[in-house]
Length: 334
Image (cartoon, rainbow, N blue to C red):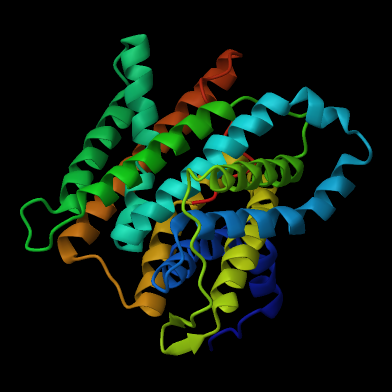
């Protein structure tokens, strides 16, 4: 006789750190689809990013103030981290990613951004002149091979080189972000860093728009999501509430429940979710050769992170911290 499913066990999974981490990846993966729906109706990437950051910053401001509990000096003591996080990890990273999405499929744009861990390996290799360990070296080579397949240089579909450059720029910003927030920081609650970073990013975007450096084109034309035609504010609301606020909060909860390293592994499923959402909501799917390249990129990043996890464990046993040992409690917003 087959045992009946246990509702408590299912609820336990969904309420566990793993279930929350998967939920976080799923809603993070919506950002490209919601953004592209807006971009296709005349929104500029700068306008979409600015609206997203402003709305999310205002919503997260309330729990952030409660988390501070009057300890405003924490903002003053961490202003450099907050400023760099907001400028590079939030504003620049999102702007470059949305510019890539405007020219490439959502899946390809996100895969290019996910080369960030490989860029970190290459930078550390060049800076230390010390060859990475076997897993990291193999993962780097695998990801670079996957990049070649994702670009499909010999295929019939022409890849927009400008879009590729935007995607690589987003990867560079993401790599810098990891360096900025790699160190343990117990003096600033993660949700405060998220809210303050979003606020700084929004301020930078509004300043760039006011000085004429960044085009700001908004539109009230209806957007198309899958078989549905919806008002523009549905896509914008989804971008702000689901793909930013819920994604951030659930990511923080998952990181604290699972540990930042395990949570960072689960976050790789964001690529899969992004491709699925783009297929369902936009009707776009990378070609077979690009999907194979994407699998190689993700596989390479997994090897790099496995090696990092192993090195971190060995360093912990030896009593010395490993470089980039502490992954972020606050994930960057793609």
